Amino acid sequence: MAKTVTVVKEGKRIWGFSPNIFFLGMVSLLTDVSSEMIFTLVPLFLSNVLGAATTVVGLVGGISDSTDALFRIASGWVSDRIGKRKLLAVLGYSLSTVVKPLMYLASAWGVVVAIRFGDRVGKGIRTSPRDALVAASVSPEERGKGFGLHRAMDTLGAVLGLGIATVIIYLVQGGGLKISLETYRWLVLVGVLPAILAVLVLIIFVRERTSEIGRYPAQGVPQKLSAGFDRRFIIFLVIIAVFTLGKSSDFFVILRAQNLEVPLIQVTLMLVLLNITYSVVSLPAGMLSDKLGRRRLIILGWSIYALVYLGFAIASQIWSVWLLFAVYGIYQGVVEGVARAFVADLVAEGRRGTAYGLYHGVVGLLALPASLIAGWLWDVISPAAPFYFGAALALIAALGLWTLIRE
Image 1 (cartoon, helix red, strand yellow):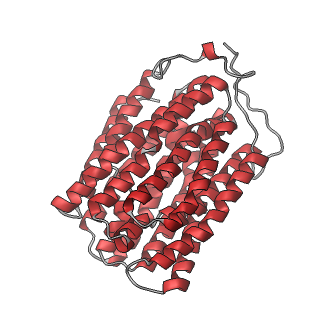
Image 2 (cartoon, rainbow, N blue to C red):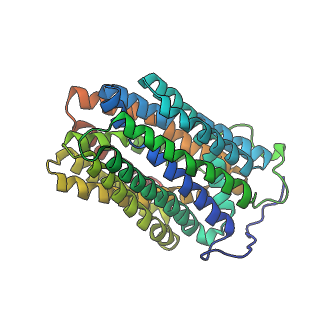
């Protein structure tokens, strides 16, 4: 097996970070500008334009979140086998870029499912190798900081995308509660451009990098996906599974806002606010996790999530929805990057592609049943029921992480 080297060679730094970290963040920023414009308002497109039922919205959201799971597992494992992260990342980003323009032609929810499937396959192919490339491009002492910057730039892209979407909505249809077909098609046309730029930045500026000398030899990577992992990592996956089962698609957060009669323009601005808080919190949270430990930050984030979901369950005024969207962004900023850095802490370099595949796979595979459960609870009990359920499982997961894993 190749000898592991823990020192990351540095070239000229950008904003105090390695060029790879910065440009991978830029790729995510541009991709999120595109995705937020085209896909964030899909639940309203399905409901308002195509007349789909809430259970169908839940199905589409669940498929969107679950489709990429198996591809994340497979691509992570393959990237460990061949020692190539960038190649798979380019392939994944390119596939998502190719299918996005097809949303302009979508006229039935089945078509939306097919297009979203293609987009998520691309995301599944790229995510695990990209995260492993991020981990290999930063020293262990700054790992939380590196992932924090990546998530901050990713989310800044969401802010910009939603901001552009808000302007387009205002120019095309003005106010109103529902989105029109013409408005959505304009979002697709404009949203494709940054996706193309993202692929170009990835190809030109991001360099392949691992912490191993040479490529990973095939005999150096265990044949079984679960082999060679720390027991704490396996327990973490189980705890993540519990949390994810209660974390329905964010489609339901958007539908809840509309259910409370929030105008469309305000919904998009609330999403902007969510992503601003997410972006602002991500880097400080990552840096704090380098000092205090990842586990504490994840527990804090899940506790915030539980409070937010309880808030969505009992909310009745538009001002409270604004507050909940802002705090929801704090949860995401605290947890998303830190959890990925925690995976790198628990797993050796030569197994990180597979580890990220398993991590994202668990989250993705359980997203479909989570959203189906949420849709059923919404239709059969009440719009508040999915949020009570999600809050309860978040608290259970936080308790499990506190008692079962030590850093």
